[in-house]
Image (cartoon, rainbow, N blue to C red; front, side, top):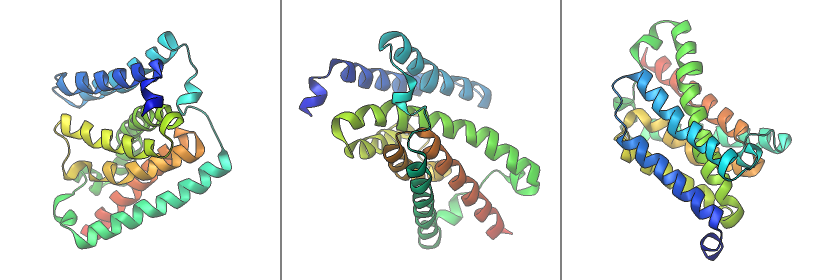
Length: 213
């Protein structure tokens, strides 16, 4: 904690992250297009401008790099299995099957499924990876180490609470968050954590759709 308090830039970064989340939570959106624009503005554009203009730093330090490729691929595979196992347990021993349902349209045609997962889910997953695993976690990791994984997960949950979205529809993002955090921490790259998140959600949605037929 003393390291954080004594690090002015780190304190400012934390403050910027919190301000972005608060502004995002109160910014009105009427449709999915406005939601996408708002998410990109507060979770990507503002943090990038802060990094480049205020910190005059490199985006590589925030996970936008290949990092340790072998370590990244290894941990991506391990954490993908871990997230899928967690999903399996929740699916069979909780009320998840009764409450989590992917959009009906993507269950009817494969092309809609792929488009939805790669474009819409992929976009939000990428934004979440940059902000929570890159901008917050990798920045904090230099000061508090492994605890940064738990912090980003707590902030991620708080984020959904602020926007009123902590419900069954966000279950998959919540499940994979700590696993993606571990991947980013181990590889120092959000590319592998993004792969973990996206592959997990695609596989989980495919399983839910398949079992429902």
